[in-house]
Length: 367
Image (cartoon, rainbow, N blue to C red):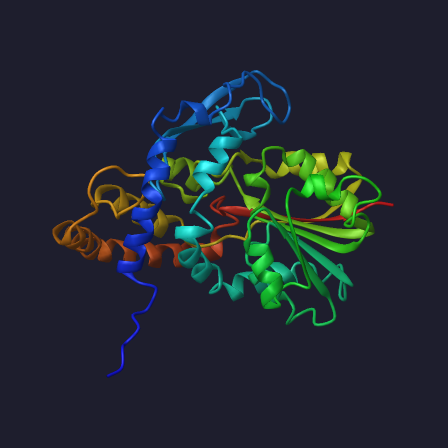
């Protein structure tokens, strides 16, 4: 008689994982969430202006971890930033099980299906660097961008850098020639750094908005690039009209992970101060047509019964609660389909209409 081995993935495995993590999360939350925040700032971290206004107040709409988060906008330069900002303990708590752990399988699957997006990002460098020798992708995650970009740049050596263990897994799987784990400004600091002056291209795709200090990241990119090297940056555009129309349901706000959202003019000016020349500013190409669909999905997810999660107290959801959640999304499926269609219809004119949810800069480092 043979014994059949049950698969290690699926609802039962996830339920066991959630149950194992719950005591630790509830212990972290025993004293509330105030300890996860720095003191509130009275000035803009980008320009120092004290002309601040509240732009948004929201909750964690994706993981539904406890806490409330605010974004302020600077009346001087337009910079949008989380205020009060998460401290080190808060960043660890709210990132935990988002890109790794419980969230790893879901997000790795999503990132692995975006080859067309990655190709568009890679090809933005082609007019200015047809055959770069070494390329560093900062915030690379599991290295899917580098794996895709290699098709257009077969002779380029792709390295990646990230804070998570995904970068180490990407090196082991062959997506990266070398994976660096840690803080970019710290790893690139000083002339003796292994990264210093090593790269023809440095890319930061949807990375700067996660940084506590975007200016230090830009300075680190300058250190890592050879003279004449290219810097590719893509970030959410806080001036997108969808940001105002959709309010807290605009996905790129992504609280609490997004700490700084920099307008294109601010970023171009800072790059100039660091000795870069901005070669192109793109709005149409980096637009990801998901704004309306994501907003509808977030709204449905907010009203539907919760999935089981270790940071939520109480008993795991039973069969009835799971059925009600499924029924909620089934009832909302026509709205989701309509939203997806509208996103596709708007996409060709998003850049001209101010509806592009992201922008991309390509800049060259001076001598």
